[in-house]
Image (cartoon, rainbow, N blue to C red):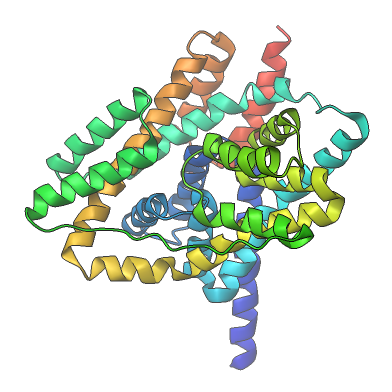
Length: 372
């Protein structure tokens, strides 16, 4: 009996590792793209979580610090395979981007420029846009529990399209909505202080650890943190090197925090790359481990449940805003339009469509159509 249980656990861990590694290899489209891919692969296809549970995880990840997609996928892996699942899933998801960025950092250090991959990225954008549109369509059915949440979410969508800060929008929607639904009650969130240690490799490690623990928002926020710590304060990198590091993170599948691997390598070779990578991702393992307890706590308190319900709707609205921005950016490009329509058709009309194949198709189609 014990042997059977061990084999079952091994199969589960292998499944978790394989799925998370796959998502790490095809995770294009930023946070919105990754949330959509996880929803497609883990929720809709494999049923590891219910739609209700998943949208709660997305909402919670948006109001706590750290990289959203990493925390979400680690929570899914934890839910599927316990503590071991969280560790195996987290490492498997981070590994592809880390190895790719490490390779590019080596080539960049030796040759001084980044390889051109733009022709292949042209078709990935419309493919990811189609995946995001489909995810918004599915998640909205769960997130918009009532007309009030739908209205608040619409206002968040408009605010995002007008360029307002996403974190401000989420908290404003959650607080205002909770106050309205619960009248005179209120909810507050207290940040925790962090310790900063100052010496050589330890300094490098704790800089990235601090960023990983307090990061909110998009790649622009990451750029600001890294610019302050690596360029302005310590003069370890030039502005151009940091810009290239962020660019590598954006065109590499998986979380944009993989830029840390590239930056760390430029600072102190392979040792710097490993310290930076471990430092920036380590907080996510701890945060993801306690995320399920946080959700249980929320479900036991009316005020926080109201807050999260509104944040869930707002989170879907923000993903919708990303889809609208991506649609507007490809509206004048007929090649991208063709790829987008084909991908949307495949998602909605082909049963059990593999999203990874869609991205591969988009990449190849984009390259071939760019030759015309």
